[in-house]
Image 1: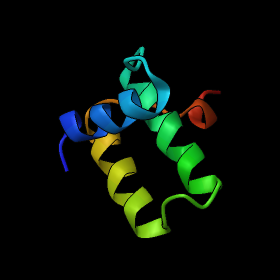
Image 2: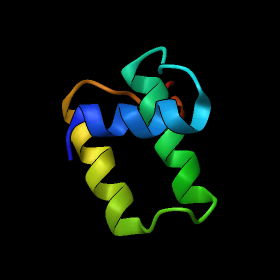
Image 3: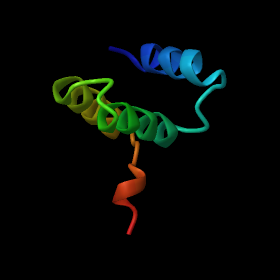
Length: 61
């Protein structure tokens, strides 16, 4: 998995580039919540994007 693969999937489904790395994380969180991806895939994506500096909308205080 690379950032480029994650962006390509986002762009294919949304027909636009992500506005930020946080936008990518929110996109994959939605895919997990709706059952499109399983927990193990989501965890890999989450930890990868988090290490890249992404912050979930749910993490804001």
